[in-house]
Length: 223
Ligand code: SAM
Image 1 (cartoon, rainbow, N blue to C red):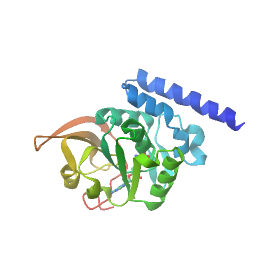
Image 2 (cartoon, helix red, strand yellow):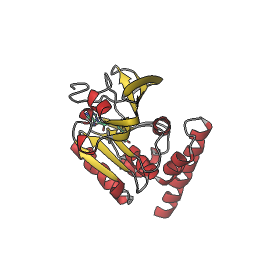
Image 3 (cartoon, rainbow, N blue to C red):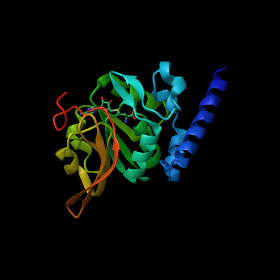
């Protein structure tokens, strides 16, 4: 029975990935491989496991969500992440996005992911470790609007919660030639914003409109 269920998840995962490719969210082979190998059903609570391959955000407890797979694919494409890179994620949530990034950066790279809700961070860490990806991911409990200075600078920074502005510490912790993707705006709507650092200068570019849960911290919303 368990095997049958497993097969069904694998079929649903393949179908979702094909659909994301058709709809233009997923383009690169590295991200396709990562999304095919990370089981999203393990990152959601049992009660919603049967909906793991619907293209929508799902509740993960504590008022938070795992982002829709199309959003994960789209933001990862924007991030231009590749093997060997050092990546900071702000907003670990379920740990799914961190696991996708870990698949792409490989053993030569590393992902640091910061979550303010300790219970979510420890569940994410457990799931990531159960997939054998623990050596590539460090889960930190804290305020990610301040970044994570001990491992800076980062080649890539991805923020998966909505911020009223681009937090200054994140810009400071971005490596020269680095790139950050962050939803910026009000609590009701945001614009995915791409921040690049080139020769010490910072360039910002707006992409699509999105809706994320708020980034709550010293350099973002206060509640
Ligand atoms: N990337 C996640 C995943 O793959 O499941 C989804 C992230 S969820 C949309 C946003 C997360 O950001 C929530 O878990 C929330 O608790 C967290 N968060 C909000 N403010 C934060 C902060 N200042 N530092 C770290 N995490 C924060």
